[in-house]
Image (cartoon, rainbow, N blue to C red):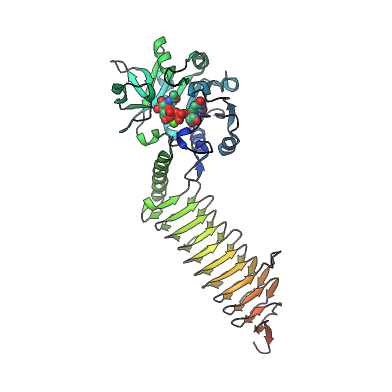
Length: 448
Ligand code: UD1
Ligand code: CA
């Protein structure tokens, strides 16, 4: 059996109150629609899904990423109309078509699979997902006959008070036999209340024909959450956070308070790492084993080796080897590479710099565009003066140099191996190896 998917994302997102289509808004750091497409791919669709988008939805194309095809719905006339625009691409391609919505990012791959397997096993024309939600407000309700067969779905706008009390909702995921789908879509009529063409009217159409309609109930009703508003987005974020954090805890990561650790979907963490509250792990961050992170820490596109400590600090686009200690209150910016056992302490900033093993920068200071060797001591208040107002210049500090407190290194400048600078020096010329310089501007002293 072959199947593929249509993902509807051409609606107006009126309730979301945004200038941008809602499906591009991030959830756990990834565009909402990306979660849907990845789940479909994991579920094993036979050919790439077709995303139905509005005419000027370049942002949605970008957010969907590679591996999707696109159809354009010229005007948002409803979900039933939207699905029709995929017909020219998909007609005759596969046996069954799964239709879902770009605003349903919590449906799991296993759920898509379960739906398809049930559809196939029961030989249905149409099988759809239902859920029992404590508060069904806003969702279509499932109307069944006395034998329990699904007869139709009534939308909230059309439902009478009795129907509104029904707890069983339409999740918005359907698997349909392909040859039946296209002519059925063409027969849908606009709804009396809103004038939209409802995809959900397919159920009544099939039931009226006596065609077999089946349903599969969600085990976890959280998966049914549709994102129409920012309030629902925040709820989805909380559910997603809980899922991600549970996964990492089961893989051996300690989270002191899982409600207060924010890990994006793309992050990887090694076992026995311990994470304190109010820590954010974002983007392509990779954490080794036995690290200690937080509290109050942001790691964004950061790569950490094993046994690192980062506390109350921000690390962006930086690579740390094993046993590096950062913080409290440090800011590592893109292009920073710290070798083993480097210590970067209180109120230090490092940008676009390579720092060798065991080098220490315990107190406030700034390194920019610097190459620092091994076993260097960088005294409190050291600054690489790398910017002359026009251009950035490099600083080189060789192995075992000792940079005295409050040294200004006016780049371009090089401090040689085992050289020393006195407290308060302003270094404007290269310092030869094993030489002591001091003063303003710094001059060599005869015996270092
Ligand atoms: C829909 C279902 C409802 C279900 C709920 C589940 C219909 C008529 N109703 O309602 O039964 O319980 O989802 O969350 O299908 N879209 C288009 N083109 C359009 C209109 C919508 O592509 O012309 C897209 C939207 O971008 C969205 C999706 O279809 O991603 C669903 O539309 P939305 O307006 O959110 O439907 P609901 O009112 O949530
Ligand atoms: Ca919706």
